[in-house]
Amino acid sequence: METQKRHRRTYSFELFPPKTPEGVEKLRATRAELAALKPEFFSVTFGAGGSTRDRTLETVLEIQASGQQAAPHLSCIGSTRADIAAILERYKANGIRHIVALRGDLPSGSASAGELRYANELVELIRKTTGDWFRIEVACYPETHPQSRGHDDDVANFKRKVQAGADAAITQYFYNADAYLRFVDECESAGLDLPIVPGIMPIGNFAQLARFSDACGAEIPRWLRMKLAGYADDVESIRAFGLDVVTELCRTLLDRGAPGLHFYTMNQAALTVEIWRRLGL
Image (cartoon, rainbow, N blue to C red; front, side, top):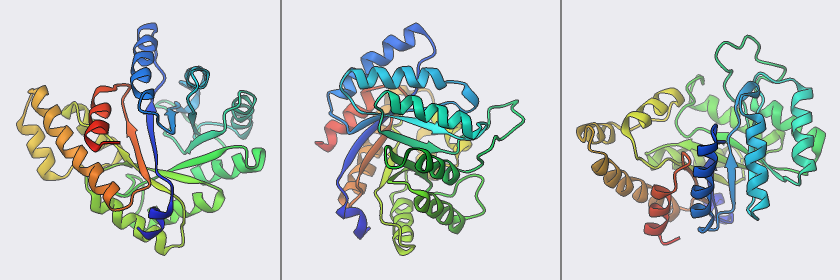
């Protein structure tokens, strides 16, 4: 963790593009609450195969227009090089300087993975076509990626993204601080010197969290899963317990030298704001 302590701390929030006019209004209110915390940037998710691309751009431009920094996600799966180049050109023309570069998941029913199969190829393409215009964040997995052959594989994949030109990384969310600390130590042993910011998922709904975690390979430790399941439909208890657990996780990570926190907000402000307040950020 020694390298991480040298990096400047950054705090950021992830949003997703709303699908309805009500969603747009709700997101504006959420964003106003979160903007008051003065994050480094808001990242905005992006559907593979064109499913939310225009909405991602609209959301990003609205964030930029409000004086905040925005970092659109860009996923390469299901896309051609020409598609990606056109999107980069649009972002560049609108003064966007920050991108979260991801492989992404192929939309259901889609036959072709497109011309770029891995995130390192996307990072390489961004650097080749736009030079140093964009600050590039990539993803990494302290707990093994669901499609990975193992932990060493994850570090090797991450290294390819860094060598292709990534500036920083955001992790998949996790609830075991040791998994993050071990992963960072392994990356540093492999000569990777860039900020690896922990991704943080506040806990508000156990059924939803279990569904997400099963899909993305994030582990809910057995003690945590049993405690949350024990609350059944008692939403207040789940939220109260979740706030304690996630605040403690964040505090441990920061005390051990993590270079900031990236919150997966699910377009809700309350839990993130409360964790922020408890941490005294």
